[in-house]
Image 1 (cartoon, rainbow, N blue to C red):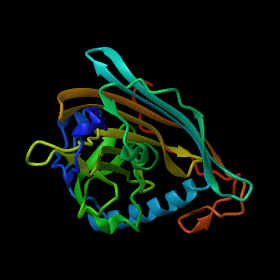
Image 2 (cartoon, rainbow, N blue to C red):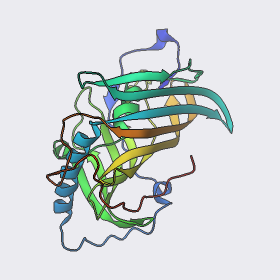
Image 3 (cartoon, helix red, strand yellow):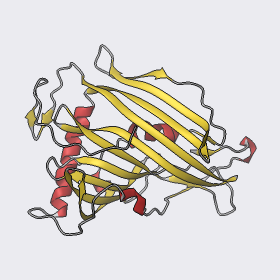
Image 4 (cartoon, rainbow, N blue to C red):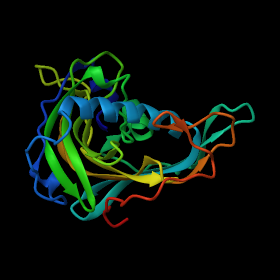
Length: 287
């Protein structure tokens, strides 16, 4: 998100990676973090296993239609003083190509910030946070322990990009991996890089809020993102202002597309009418 400033004041910005630490409030809903090592597997084996499952999940999700609902608000105290909304459907055309169709997009009423291209990319691609075996080597993944997420027992990892490539977005934060399906069931962090002022105090800032994404099992097999929430304050310097951001993204109406593409689980094809036994779901905040 960008602070709204006069166009004449915009100059080319320097991109730097924000040094970010996980805040205690991020894990207030979970049980105590147990730092002990996993039994029967090493952290490295768990990382490789969930990354392989993430690749399967990504390929499976690409065969589903769904609706994504976005609401972003700025707040002055408890008063909403600006809003951005979008509702769009991800579907397929008659040739099987994925199509993004806008359903609802009222005129934004934001006055203190503007929505950047990176914000839109994060909404569609960053918040779901997929970390596959094709991408895992781009990240430093640190095992931090085990934690109970409601009825799920999870392995917990801190994740950060090793390097920042131009025009690419990365997740930086914490993930929870279910010890039964070895899939990510929750993530907390932010998208990077951010753009900050240069040493002379000038530039075009582009800041992003911390967010949490919860997943639920769809068709009893893969854990799909269903709800993302951000509630954060962005500290802009040009002009100096703190902007309280509240954002909710919902992913609903997942339906498997009627194509000939096979969806597999652990190397075996899943018929469209077959479901795995349902697993416990992590709780989510009131929607």
